[in-house]
Amino acid sequence: MSVVEIRNPEGTELLGEVEPTDPAEVGGVVERALAARPAWSALPVAERAAMLDRAADLLEPEQETLGRLLAQESGKPIGQAEFEVGGGIHFLRGNAIEGRRLVGRMLPTEGNFGTEWDLAYTRREPLGVVAAILPFNFPVELFVEKCAAALVGGNAVVVKPPLEDPLVVERFRQALIEAGVPADVIGAVHGDAEVGAALAGAHGVDAISLTGSTAAGVAVATATAARLPFLHLELGGNNGCLVLDDADLDLVAAEILRGRVLMNGQACSASKRVIVDRSLHDDLATRMAAAVSAQKVGPAPDAATTIGPLIHERAAAKVAAQVANAKGQGAEVAAGSGESDGAYFAPTLLAGVPYSADVAIDDEIFGPVFNLIPVDGEAQAIEVANSSSFGLMASVFSADPQRALGVAEVLQSGGVVINGTDNYRPPVIPFGGVKLSGRGVEGIGYTLEEMTREKPIIFRRFRARGE
Image: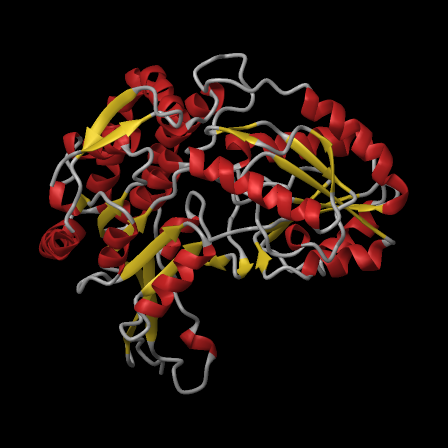
């Protein structure tokens, strides 16, 4: 098979190449991982953790170069790209730390009649071979979150990087190999959805960790149902950001902007549905129109750019079609053109979006579009927020913390931020969704728990009875 050229989203610059994997060859990569896994699992966790630290040491001098390459291949603004690469190095070290303290538990058999003379404890064991399927929007961060946790937990991994921007991910993978991880323990396949399907369905895959669209997650779950592999899924999101009638609009505008423009609006957990009390709608629309107009659209490596190109021209065209659909359903384009220009889509504000419109429920826009959905009161805001089939994150803005907490507790989402953007994912919190937004959580330590199982071991009548 011929190599796949990796270009910038504009298509104007050749950045590198990858060797595509024939779907028929995916099973062989998994078989090699399966064969290599027992020896890897038998290593003391201290040795596995040390390899993650060594990989971080190898990558650190390359951080600036890799940040620029990530900006070029993904379209992510340069500051965000450099931050992601630095975060990936930090996550390697964080997973090494968590691996060293991965422990089981003593179980309270003494407190139960019939087991009071037994000794029982648990230990954490690897799942086996993990298939890690990555998205284009945060490829480095999610490579490390999934693969470093799986590796330090004693699993073998076969990763499918995103075909749009695989180059920095591949450098991280090679650094792990240089640091001592056997190549078959951290294998890779490159290709389109057909290759991803072959990986998820391959005999020997014990767990699938996928970040991607809900459609991809459902397809994997359906195709693998007969085998029942462990599924770790972070899928789509159409986050609800609730702006109650006592909210601080200066804070709201700043936080919505920050949460929506990350990765040019191509983030699962972006603030996609701003559900605002009708009494504040027009004032917030004025503020957001000014914020949208102030954005600098341009090439990702340019330090002044705040909005780079979307991942490719097709993505930008899809966003434009979604905006047109929302207009047809009653939304007003209050700022921006709502039109694409090649791979570029300038930020756009939709005001007065009816709560029955597609974008107010399940039509997730993967681009820098701000949707303001006016509602009449708190109860309707909650109803509209919970009307979506998605439930990744949510946020509530209110001057009354008790009121905000009451709303947060009834929102159907994986997490809720009060008086801040719902695009909130520091590695120290468990991040994951409910409903069609997925299953399981990610984060330093949390992913490691997901990538291992807790096995009880019991000694019957181990304790000596007293006289």
